[in-house]
Amino acid sequence: MTPKSREVMYKKMLLLRKAGKLDFAVAFSSAALIDTHGIVPAVQSALNRALRHFPEVEPRETMVLLDGGLRAPSMFSNQKTIIRGDQSEPVISLASIATKVTRDRLMVRIAKKYPPYGFEIHKGYGTIAHRAAIKNHGLSNFHRATFCKRLSP
Image (cartoon, rainbow, N blue to C red; front, side, top):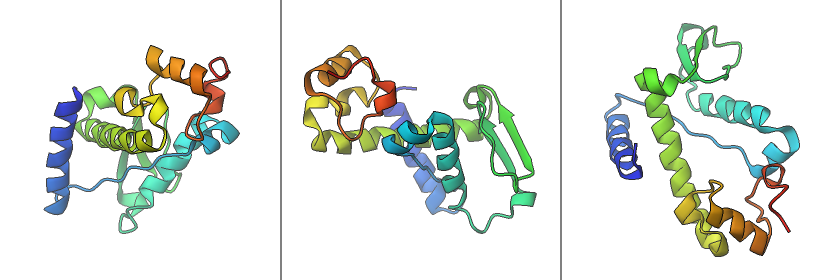
């Protein structure tokens, strides 16, 4: 999907949320957590925090569909991990859209704090321009140092 089409879909998701027909939560992990504990525990931490946004949900009565190699906490006994689930399961696709739009918006906000890096353009992905900015300016507090070892001065 293009960034514009994701934004359109995300706005529809917000309308459905307001109407009480859909709910979702997005959680991220900090660069420091990723650098200290690794990407898999950091993703797991974000998943666990996102699930806590739904205290009214009864874990044993809820089906949790997950993309890739994720696992929900064991109290969610009805769960299924689907490789490339964002391509085959509409609810996982919506979760992916919500996460990507939220992250892109975060990158635009972070760009104001770290203007030399161009986060508003590349959204934190390892483009040539982003790698060049890291070489020229070093790592910011927002960068995951373990992912940028060869790039920092």
